[in-house]
Amino acid sequence: MTAVELEFNFDTAKSFVQEVMERSDQNLLACYQCRRCASGCPVGEETGYVTPDRLIRMLVLGDRESALNNDLVWKCVSCYTCGTRCPNEIQTARVTETLKKISKETHQKPLSPKVAHFHSTFVSSALRWGRLNEIEFINFYEIKNTLTDLKNFRFKAIFSEMIAQGQVGLNMLRRKRLHFGFQSAKGRKEIKRLYQRAKTKQRG
Amino acid sequence: MDIGYYPGCTLHASSSLYDVQSRRVFSEIGITLNEIDDWNCCGATSAGKIDDFLAVAMPARNLGLAEAEGFSEMVIPCSACYSRMLVAQKQLENNIKLKEEINAELSKKVQGTIKVSSILEVLLTPSASDELAAKVTKELKGIQAACYYGCLQTRFPFKIPINDDVENPQGMERILKLLKAKTIDWSYKTDCCGASASVDDETTAFNLMAKIMKDALSRGANCLVVTCPLCQLNLDAYQDKFCKKHGIQDRLPVYFITELIGLALGMSPDELQIDRHFIDGSELLKELDLI
Image (cartoon, rainbow over all chains, first blue to last red; front, side, top):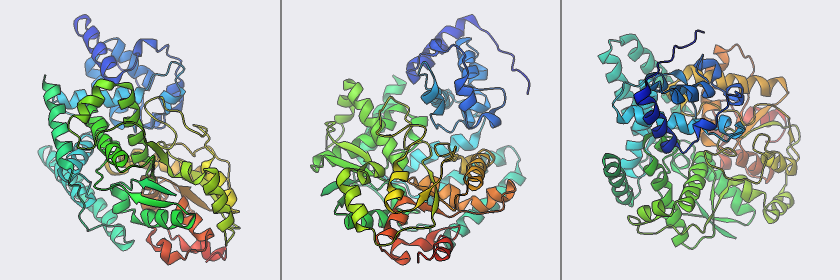
């Protein structure tokens, strides 16, 4: 485990930390690095150097690049343990969620394309019909993954993903957990209109 | 008693057994679940990672629908749906402008009056739990349950008080006590199972689930009991795989709380669809002479 060298840029530091604080609604300046968040984080073993407190430090120091591209942002499972235990009530999961959104909006290449694909496909599937149809969602998700892997010539990854998903699907079929019926909500138009509103707002 | 009921997408699909069990169990103790008409997906844990406005708008429509149907309370068995609905209600309460903006597009406006309840909250109201205790026909002797709550039953991204301990909840334990089942004390009851990571980041999810499993086994549990359909599916469907990867020999059936209640109330395994488990759910019950 090696320490990441933090990049400091005076011009961008202030505006970036402000943006993240506003959007996540968290006072990151209140963090006094007690590391209760770090000791409770269930994905700590997977994220290596970057713990919630260190992510906050990156943001305060304005290292935009590191803050958007680290394992914590992409492996955070939004379990809200860090925020529940923080003496200053900083909910770092809302920060990682905000950083995922900023990454998408600014068209960055996500550190974990699968995680990004999962959430974007889930939301578009749920919006399309008003309710989530699991098989349709998983299919679209796997198509996105395959395209990313193809672009990067990761043929082995495509193959192992197909095998793994095939096994899960078969198991689910055997246990009568695969649902072939279709579900939708008539009122999805209202949600779509709201989403349009959200997107216009974002652009504005 | 009549209350509103939001099943959510998964209770109409891969976890429809939870829907069947919930309806049966509640009707047995005198509570009729009325499914909200034309409900939509709550956005689950994904919407909040894509768009903040959408993350509130999706659950908001359901709150409006339920209120318009005249319910003062709505029960949500799925932890993710429950959490999203509760959080959206809180955000709308805190932000009048946001509420107006969302209401502008909704045919059934959100007032903010409905009580959003988890399945445990409803089962633990004094009248429901008295009724439950009185209706037990089969005591669940021999069950040693590790009650697993996961994240979203007790922890929220906003300050929302709940009627249980955040890090050591007791709701399921209290219910299982009424059914004369034993529960274990353990450390991983509110740890995360990885949620969607089982699909998009398997290594992480498997590490998390292996820890949960090891602790439950080392403390002598003979089953896991859950309220969340995603925790259930993860711990059940991937159990064989993550146990093999992490050198764990034993396996544990993963029951929904409604499954064990149903059994205690005398319902048959067929009625409760116990055959829909990945790790055989009936083996332990046969061993303990419960079916």
